[in-house]
Image (cartoon, rainbow, N blue to C red; front, side):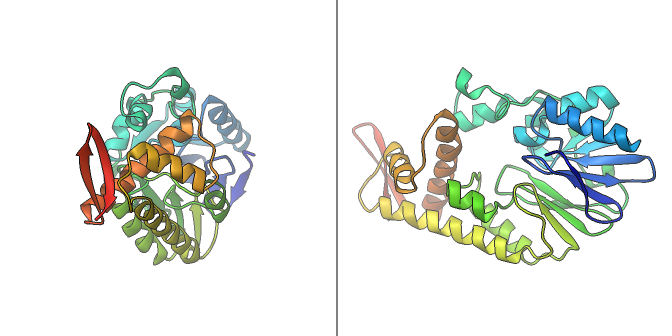
Length: 292
């Protein structure tokens, strides 16, 4: 873990729970794409920088989930590097309490205020095209989170952040986290057609052809949507739908899984309602979902 792996002349990644990109800007200066999940990750990255005599100029965050921004504060404090994050992700990066609050739908209890959902705050600036290093391209990847982006480096390595999951992850957890199902499917269709020397997903193996994995993720989203529609043949409350999904997929519920999967299921429900496949009724002061 935290091994530095070279992909091309200038592009590397650091093997970690969420892959960290590293790109050489010249002989001494480098930038990072994300920073790992906590201070310890930041410290290990710092050791790699020191071992290679590299100066960290900036961190470009793909999005604001804690496992991608957790090393920000430590690395910024150690190196004085600048941190950039796109759109609303910048606000979440500066105010990370927003992530567990959003997932829970209110003030998060202590069970949710831990490093896996609540990073340390860092001094982030808005990511725009004009602050990117020369030759970098920002790729918009909405769906998994609000304003997530990926990057194409000058040597045509594409870092894809969390826009898809590995087969192994989906087979184990079944329901991958997403915020906007419609945007997510559009992103995956776009990614499926991309060309690159190498693709680097944060939570899957690097590959020269991403199309098959993108299609697998698309199929899984459609499978889950159909499963929800089947459950709503009779009127169902949200909690009943969630319980049946956990049971049907053999998942184990805890507080973290409740908010991650629960938030995702709410997003599916909103998408299915907006597309006319589900309707809602209010009975006995309960919101009930039913197949239209």
